[in-house]
Length: 355
Image 1 (cartoon, rainbow, N blue to C red):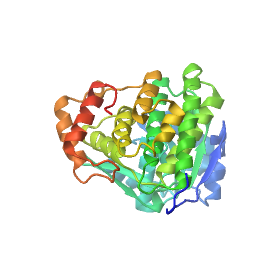
Image 2: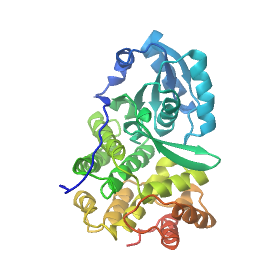
Image 3: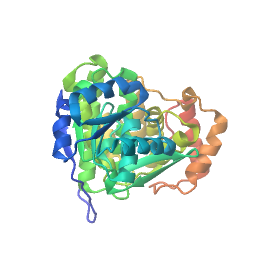
Image 4: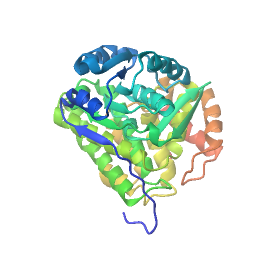
């Protein structure tokens, strides 16, 4: 994994692992020097937010339960009014990528510290990256203020996550690691983190599917999510993330499912240019083609494989290919509209990735 030349950046983040560790949230708030936390969640998890408010007691300044997929700027602006009204001095984000994204968006605009308690495997809690949507366009920004100060990984909180959501959320996290292997800004440490994160999911996900409430297996998947998210915060994104941001922001597709479907196709596309950098995927998942290996793993988990099943029409693919080829992220394989359109057609049909 040695490279002759590279740069690396690490961020000081406190991470607490362990079943039941959410009970430490009050201690973490006090350690940050805060006393009026705004608890964030989606409408679906409002009950969990109420329980968290009870858990941290008089440190809870209020609750905001309107977090929405793709972090619409309009929702962030509404939440900022609530922040001001209760004079919140920190944020507690309890949930998946939607809630964590809202917390990041607020922190980016206010500088408020964040305690994040993930309930999925998205991994965004471990990055200084914010993706937000306005007027149907999803953009990303990276800034130190976006990085949460504290992350609490509690296996009990994901032990009841439905298996289908578990699978798509995990594949979403795995996409961060897979793209990190060929990132323009990769370094030896990021490559090791990526490989270890993929190994954790390869080892633990089948056990979770067999016994969903296995706390050891759930803990290992959270470990994988932490590693995959951490590596995403250290390196740049490429074609896979560009496609998912384009499809998600333009067509309002479910985030994790979109990542799950696109992953093997984007990896197969880039394996044409950098097969040696994607060799760890083959070493971990088997086979000789990284994209096919990930596709086969997704099938073994009964993951979604076709964009058409998300309501995408073939007519949508032309526009998505055009957008993805416009101002593309850096990518090891040239991003040409015709090639991207062919990739999307295969992903739309749910066929094995093109080689």
